[in-house]
Image (tube, rainbow, N blue to C red; front, side, top):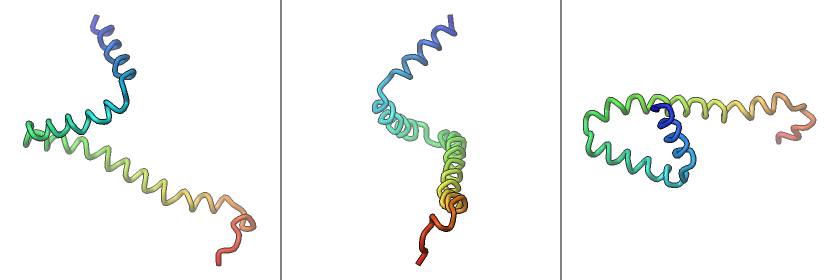
Length: 82
């Protein structure tokens, strides 16, 4: 019975409005921060880690994409640099 309830919950979450979910996340986070106080600091460490990892991945992709793209292109197609 618990598996069916979980599946129903996941189905309703995936069918909910994206705008509603995007707006409810910061609101619920603000409420949790205001009511939770110091206990939220423990959770914050686990939330910051994936965000920092995503920043590292995005920075490396953005900085290496032009380098790899120009390395795979023939010099004749690159054109004049000056």
